Structures are given as structure tokens and as C-alpha cells.
Length: 226
Image 1 (cartoon, rainbow, N blue to C red):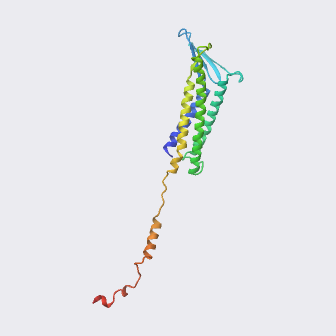
Image 2: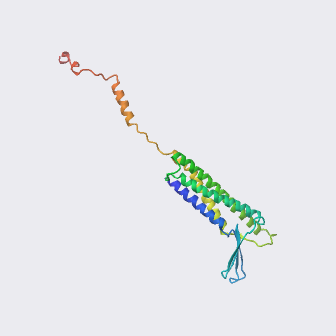
Image 3: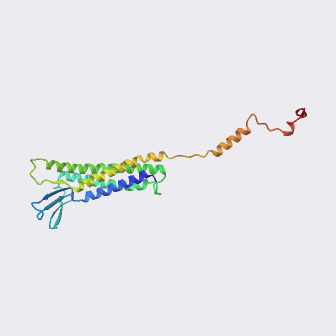
């Protein structure tokens, strides 16, 4: 098993785990209302529910009960993150089948094709996550710096950074998997030509013009001693 495939598998599976954590997290955007340390209140919003907590330790969450009243950009981010997680799951399975150390997947040539497919799926997963997180972050920053926006303004949450990190890992792992095909094409092929060379030398030796099988007694006549 090549070292490149090990790094690709670790990167891809690690990125898939980060995408799952980002999708289920409630810290996509956060805000703090604090007139003092004692009365500080934190508000978190995610793709699936809104949460609020205070400095006294109280923490409550309320899920989005309806789909049609959710903002359009949240629905788009939901679809992109679900697609990213699904593609990351199938990419991890394809990556395991494409590894050289596994006994499933067929020959080395078939494993190389499966590994390339896993790389493409990982790249698509990373692009979906990158697009969803960037879309959500763009909405937050647009509202934050808009002077005409009078509602509550939020800042970037930790889930966005986790999603960006997971997308980067998936893309890196996918690229490494795609380039791992060249390792199979560069494997040295050794051919044993010993028997062929011996037979050819024997053929040349027996078929040479200078070699004549004659009787040794006939080579020496009486003129040789004169």
C-alpha cells in the first residue's frame, strides 16, 4: 500500500467527519448580548435549530418546526451540506475498496479506477460543503455590514470554520486519490530473460560457421609431424 493512499484516506475520512460535525452543529452564526458579565446572553443559530444560553448556565434550543418559513439561503445550505455528507460517505466506502491493502475490489487496475472514483466523489463533497458554508457566511457578513439592516446582527460561528476545514481536507484527499493512479502505472515490471539468453547462445553456438564437429583423430595426419 502506497503512502500517498494512506494520507488520502486519512484526509478524506477526516474531512467527512468534519462535515458531519459542521452539519449537525448549532453554531453557524452567533451573537452576544452583554451589558455585564452576569447578564450576558448568547444566541446560536444553526441549520436545524436555534439555541440561547446565559451566564447562569441556562441553555435552551428550539428546532425549526416548518420548512416553508425557513429562509431560502438556509434551505440551500441544508441541501448542499446533506449532499456533501452523502458524497463523503460514499467516497469513504469507495476509498476502502480502492486501497491496495484490501482484498476486495479486484485487480490492481480495477482498484486504481475505484480509487480515482473515490477521489472525484471526495472533491465533489468538498465543493458542496465549501459552497454551502461560503453562502451562509456571505449572508451573515452582508447583514452585519449593512447600515440599513436594523434587526439582530450575527457573527460567524465555529461550524463554518469546521465546514471549511472539512471541505479542504476532502478536496486534498480527493486530489491525492486521483493522482494515485500514476503510482500503478509506474510500478516496475521485471521480465526474466535468462532462459531465453541461454537458449539463444546455444543456438548460435551450434549454428555458427566456425564450429565444425569433426573426428579429432582426423585432424592430425602424418604431415603435421613433419
